[in-house]
Image 1 (cartoon, rainbow, N blue to C red):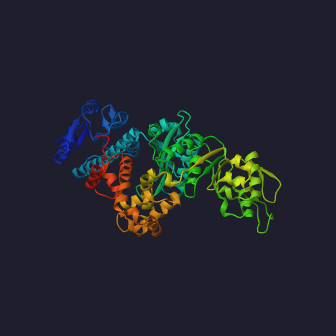
Image 2: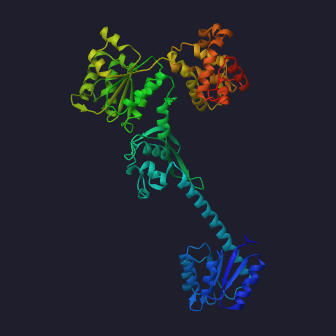
Image 3: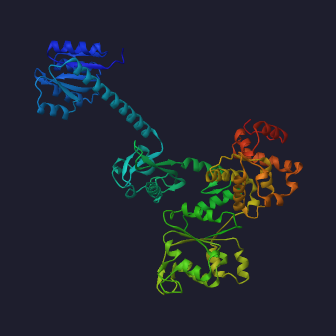
Length: 569
């Protein structure tokens, strides 16, 4: 049998060769013999052996020389030295050079077969580990994503070739601290690894602009995961960096983006906002984000920060309408001990905390006149004094403000400083209300289905066509925030896998009234809903039917009824 273990016996005594050969052949092994060192080399040239029994004395050579040949040729065979007069020096030298074991003459059958069995079992395990290692190494080399492993101290343990192409890291980086090696990721890679190391959970960051100097404009996805050894003990982390530049460019060129950072929508208005955010991300000017309550102004601020060059610095948020005048000044600028009743120690303000990064001033239209004046000075000079102190503090902060009020009208009424208004309104990002971008409804519903399923650990796959029709006809005074809360309410009361009208909050059903679920009116909006859902799913009928809450046969009937044709057919 060709898969029998192959054993080479090297000994200058014919009786020893004969005895070894008979014992080993009877055990089922394939055995070759050699009378001396030269003949042994010839056999090694012809065949790959699993195990070699070598006499310690081979004319002018020794079994030690055989071990050196096996080692120098990087052969996989294990060597057992056979000696007639064993001593500690010979044994130690043989083992030091890599011999598996040594046995003494005269060799009895039981000892010979036991050692042979142990050696071959050891070799089988070693070969399996080597195959596993080789396969893993081949996979590691072939993966196009950058893979970097670190230990618990963030020291780089291993990386693949793609890490050089994507991150600019070569083999020289092994052994260095990850944070000390320039990668051009603005610190987000390090932050993700630190979080994984400290909290022992995975972290994912989508569509991060990598500033690696050799490839400007690279867009990557990052994921980090804990590494565990065979006993389940935490040993470090692995970071995988996927180059998504081509896909991001394609999306931008085709204007088919359904999501930007955490903002969802594929309508023309939203695509224009995505482009504007990209243009503003690295321009250190003040931005005013306007829009009704619940339209996602905070998400725009996050996108501006995390897509820009300040992304590795703090993003500090202040809800101005939630604080009284005295508290707001203290929150924004800080105070010194004794500045007012309750100021028992010095406190750093939000502007100082945001130094080097971004401060987001939400509901800026509600700040009082005195605070408006102090804020104007910060915008003009990037300098302020803490409450109760006259020492100026310099900061480098990008300001993003947001409001759901008409600031120009407040200026005319004398409620908002005109000079501050023009300082804030250098560039305006105006978010449309949900009622003006209803074509985004299928995308938003799909996004919230995934988000709330994860939050509530449920598996609801769709909303019914009646629910979608209601959503398309409702005015949504609370905008996207109201849509999310509506769906979360429906998730809580829904016990099936699809949300129906019965699961909606009473206020939605009361406002819609019976006319919106009347058959005639329902059919009026149904073709548009079906067409939008088919576009969203790239005309995948199975996915579209699941999202609509109907089966595929019903979808095909409705497509025929409304004369909706697949563009690829």
